[in-house]
Amino acid sequence: MIEVKDVRKSFRDKAVLKGVNFVFETSKTNMIIGASGSGKTVLQKCMVGLIEVDQGEILFEGRNLTTMTPEARKELRQQVGMLFQGVALFDSMNVERNVMFPLDMFTDWDIKKKLERVNTVLERVGLTGTNKKFSNELSGGMRKRVGIARAVVLKPKYLFCDEPNSGLDPRTSMLIDKLIHEITIENQITTVINTHDMNSVMEIGENILYLEDGISEWKGSNKDLVFSKHQRLNDFIFASEFLKDAKDMRALETRGIIDDNRDMNEILKEGKIEPGKDEKNDK
Image 1 (tube, rainbow, N blue to C red):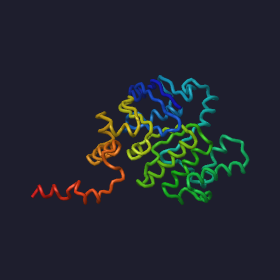
Image 2 (cartoon, helix red, strand yellow):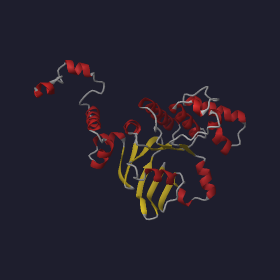
Image 3 (cartoon, one colour):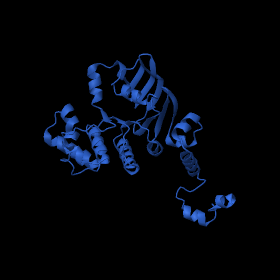
Image 4 (cartoon, rainbow, N blue to C red):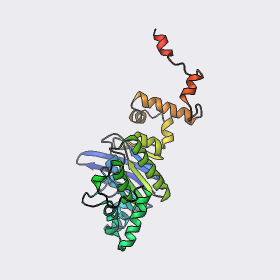
């Protein structure tokens, strides 16, 4: 668990975070969402210690990052995995060496033990046999999976993901979401995801913080989103008429008013929706 208490951060005379409070829960996919400039990237950088807060506390299982000694921070960072937006693989290293890099940095294991761990995580992300491939030989989705393998190779307690689906097609995005979600549960990780991908939010957003202008504007789960009456939140997530209709449809499914396994062809045949009705009325 990571708890953020009254976190504030300004750059010169610009206040970016204005007293953010939230609890990021273990074994859940925690998400930070918000428009560009809302403060979500700054908040995540504060949480990993890349930016110092002006005020407030960031507690990792009760240990306050903001008052830790350099030695304590170094120890904590060994428990943190990071999946960068651009993945940030080393082009000069093959898959095996990229995934092994954290082990080289933070362990004194022999090469055999390192290889065993590398192969274990590559198998888990579905990349068995890709050890000797280089970044330019991989698809975008494969590079993301290498990034996930590297992020979890040290068995972290905390995993931070910055726009994990950036640049991916919808189907591959869903596969990456599913993988992150499964790994989070399997390894009881506290996973924190910054995202603009509303498909991800609706599918795996178990604990969501919505930031607006540096303020904790809304908190809840993807199920809460379906029934939320928060106008600014709805305007941000369900920006188009199509998405608003999808929200209403999901709400009806959740309440059991319509069957989520419905066959639209059968519904049309049964006359529950009259095809061409609007067109007839227009004539």
